[in-house]
Length: 217
Image (tube, rainbow, N blue to C red):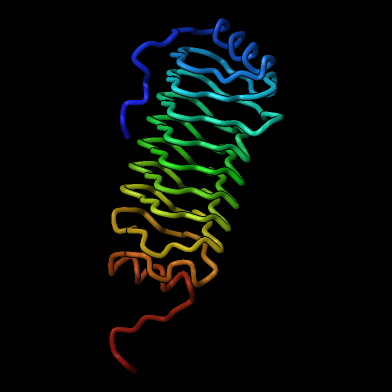
């Protein structure tokens, strides 16, 4: 992805940033061209959350938003989104870098050209979501719920998917050879066409109840 930080932007922090976002929400305007630092952003105090060409650093985003959120051409770095509810949101050309996203709700969301890098995404909820051209790099996705989700041109590199739930999510063409897949929950056909190592294949077969023997008895 290109650097999405605009050449000129307005820098705001702390309570000033929260007041500005609240003003944009009341006026039904998109928050655009902002560099937001060190802010506690409670979503349940906003009428909307629409960011474009923004950068957020060291921010805490919490609560549930009444309306569907939108983020476009935006970077979030070292932010805390643990437990926040962004369900039904639309994210286009967004980067999450070194963020804490434990229990983040993104059910029924749409993501396009999204990067997750070195993020803690334990118990992330991506159920019934539609994500395209998205990369997870060196992320902790243990216990994540990725059920009935459409993944198109999505990659996982060096990720921990231990105990992740992948029911009814087709995984054809996805390369898991650098990932940890121990204890993932499957219905049976999700891995058809996925790329795994021989060791992973053996472990996955056991998860599906297949008995493996070296030689016929």
